[in-house]
Structures are given as C-alpha cells and as structure tokens.
Length: 316
Image (cartoon, rainbow, N blue to C red; front, top):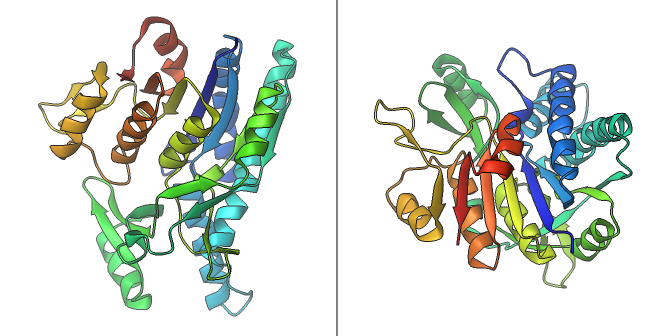
C-alpha cells in the first residue's frame, strides 16, 4: 500500500530574499520546488501539497489598501486576499508540476482546490494578532505606518525589522477534506488549504461566514495530514535543520528528536512565534494523533533527508 505524505510549502520559502519578491521571482522558486517535489513523488508516495502565504497575502492586502487610499479601487478584505493567494500561488505550483511531470514522464495530474477552514469565532487570536504577513519595515517606516493606520499591529524581529501581524485562529475543520482525500487516493497530486485555508466561522444559524484572518499553514497541514491518515508530514523551510539557540554563538542543529523533547524545547521558548514555533507545534500535534514522522528541512535537502535521515526528524 502506498504511503501518504503531506508537504507544507512555506510562503517565505517561495521568496529567496527581499530583493527577489516579484511574481516572476516567485515562479522561479516554485519551479525549483517542483523539481524537488517530483523527486519525492518518484519515491512512490501519494501526495497532498499545501502552502503558506505570509508574504504574499500581505502584498495583496497592502496593494489593495494603497489603491483604496488613492481613490482608485474598492478595498479587498483580508479573507479575500487569502483566497487570491490560493489561486495565484496554486496556479504557479500547478503549472510548474505539470511541466516537471511531463519532463520526467510522471503520469500524474496536479489539481488545485479552493479550500475553506473552519475556526472558532471566539479564538483568542482575534483579540491578540500574532501572524506576520507582508514585508519587513525599518523603524521609521513602521512608525509612519502605525500613525496612518492606528488599527495595525506591528512586531519587531531581530535583524529583520518590523512586520505587520494579523489574527491567526487555530484550524478546527477542513471543509473540503472528503474531496481532498478522494482525489489524492485516486492518484491526483492535490494542492489544498493554501495559505492555511480561507478562514470561516459558523454563525448563529450554523452557516459559514468568512473572517479576516490568516490561519497558520503548518497547523492546517498537520490537521490535513491527520484527517487524511498520512504517515509523513514534510515541512520544507529555508534552512536544512531546526536550531536550538538560533542566532546565537551557541546555536546547534537538531537532528532526530522525540515529541517529548520537542515539547520541552517549546516550553523553554526555543522557537520563534510566527516562524519555527508553529512548525514544531504542528509536528507535535500530528505525531500525537497517530502520525509516524515529521521532516523539517530545506527543499534542496529533502531527498537526502528521506534517504539518510538528515535534516530535523521528529518522531513519536
């Protein structure tokens, strides 16, 4: 029986650096990623892909704000910006995989599914935004933006600058889960729950209603992997390994750790919110609910990690 794997591509991983964040730059990164994913698919796994949208959803939202402030266009709410990223990034992944599969004679079809993710309307994140989106601003620009937009929340990240944060409620249910699983089990390579999914709540009548937030894609990927019954959750990121004491002279890479060790490091505050922390939390959630292995590494190192256990491997 073929094993099932969920691969959660980071939105940041699609932008190599601050000077290369155009649509064409992102496409080049996706095309490179498609090659690594094709390598993995040739191992024989059934695969569902999901992706982040942190930088991209921020770009779209800011573009909307600027157009609205200039009196040119209507404002686009954050929930619609999330939907936009599912289509835009999903299209690039789909096109890149179609081409990569054709070059290798891989007889599979990628398909992108617009996906809703239910969240709790009373989630505390709505009162305390934590999810970074968009670009980094230097101090002077950040201060001027807060003056212009007093409802904005910005946080500082050492060495990078200030970044806007928005609500990020935890995912409770993937609305299209049955369709995702059915398509993947039929052999399609499904791209689903992009950007963590379009967040929706249930109103008093039990109907779904979109909300302005960005669900963390790693937590949604963990839920997706659990609901589908995947054995492996893969989280490509910008580094080969997760580090303890990251950014300090004492930094050291993690290789293989257990869930209990991961929980201990979370309690010690080893992982940064909005960055590595949700990846480790997603790993703990997935493995605690029956998953067999989580791999966190760079796309370039993915095949080596699957073959010889390099990268950071988290096991039950």
